[in-house]
Amino acid sequence: MVMVPNWISRRAWTGTAGILALLCLTPGLPGQILMPASGPGGGVRLFTSDAAILEAREIRKDVPCTVTPVKPVLGFDLKFHAGYDVSIPLKDLAGSDNILTMVFRVTPVDKPDEAVYFSHRFNVPMIDADAGGNAILSGSFDLGEGKYRIDWLMRDRAERVCSFNWESEATLPSKDKQIALDIPPSAVQPADIEPFKKEPAIA
Image 1 (cartoon, rainbow, N blue to C red):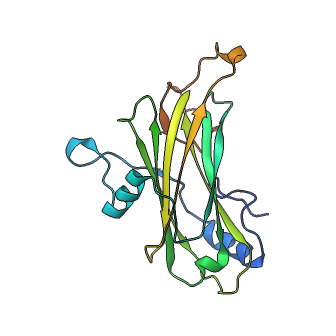
Image 2: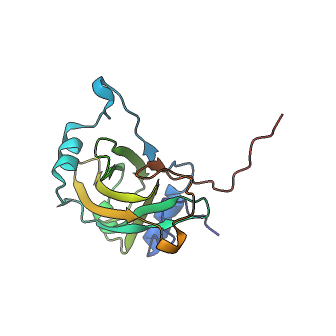
């Protein structure tokens, strides 16, 4: 049985080549990483081209990927879990020594100056030019109640870009408004991939 990481959908890789690629990608790869503030003013440091694409909110298809937003869903940890699935034809990743880098920004509509940036990078194994099927990669993040704008891009080693943007809203039904969430309104956090991890021992 192959265990699929949280950042790869279980619908993920179709076709024999996709299964082989999954086996090569699975070991030891982290999920998306929160990008810390750096430099003057506490802003996040981005490549100029990445910053321009995110600011313009333009949609590009240099790499023919399809992004499907995942609507926020309230989890047992009392946080809204949101994210995306990205479908990429394997034939468009053909070759070797390729690297896919995803960069995305989640901005609370009520707090536009408090955008949170994430990055996600992984190596692509050798893929034949005639490979069939699609790879589906997934990313996730946690939200408090509120409305958000998500600006997302992915680039490969040849600087081909796929970019997309969408809006998302996390809201409790009126009958559940009394629930105290474990994340403030208009807050964005990295997804906790170990929701059932052990509590530290109490001395």
